[in-house]
Length: 492
Image (cartoon, rainbow, N blue to C red; front, side, top):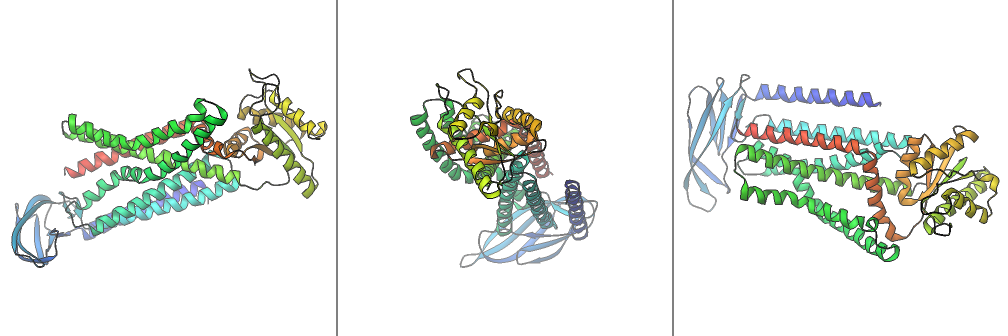
């Protein structure tokens, strides 16, 4: 199914669900059942219902604490109820309650105090069905995207959105359970507010998992500081971990500030609710994108190579002062040699090495030349080596290497050798350069992985920062609609 067909499916389904809910509410909404709320089981007696204005609604039935109203004409009236209640094993007591009913032009009765009406459950079920449909479409799109290429920002976004939507659906189901089993008086309005602030709940639930993740990242950073020296790069995990773990408490801090300095006006409450909703949803979004980046990187790192490649690019990553390869770069070169030998043994197909990397300001030789020297030392024929020695970034590695490859063999099948944690982002750059490429990953020490995942995550986010800005704006708009809409509905 094409993207256009999927969009049409979602639009048509959304319109059908909307039409179905609206039709059901119009047909059945001329009656309304009010359940008298108590915290105990018991019996009701002498239930008396008083309408402030006559002729708006009428009482059809009163039984076991359930009062059935039917609409008469459009309007609004306050309802007062008095009753005797005897709890199981307790004494009889007299109580009263009140609320406001409004009947619309379609004779739909709405309890404006709790926003309950006959058909509210239909809206909830339809919303859940639509969210599940979106999830199914996302999963289908994700499978199709991975079939086209393993290395795509779109793949990571799809995986992140699947995680995000799955979490939201679980939260939505939990809210439905609370709504169905709850005996409080907040009704449908309470359900809406729970949905609005579900992001905060999810953030709190994710704190233990994030704490565990960043605990291991902190251990990784400590090992990096011991083995690799004191640099900002080597404590990146600790810095981001502190930000991630502190962010969920920003909503609580906002509440404290609001309690001390807020004026409790409607405008102030709107601003406070909006900020809390935006912060929590943005945190959840980036949590999901982070986990998606980890999943995509792991999937790429364990992908088995295809032995039909014409060229293998070796991505440079720095040299020693004497111009020889660092252990990390040596591992990439060794992995490329291993791959080429295995391909030769299994298929007999020749594969040309493309060592790639320019000369840094602190290097005495270009990385591509240094890798070539190492390959020759390992017994590789110079005729099987095509050096790229101008690039300074991973994207340039891919672009400049492709130019050299195209001169020899247009539309060639290419592999690229890099460290495992770097495969996914390197593959994205290969796609950008127009290479038909697969990645082969070399192993590295365990303490590189956690911090490397974070660096890859930051790199991917920076590479597509416009998309994240757009997503943040969308979250802000949706939060504003939910918060303002809920407040308006509450004031009906």
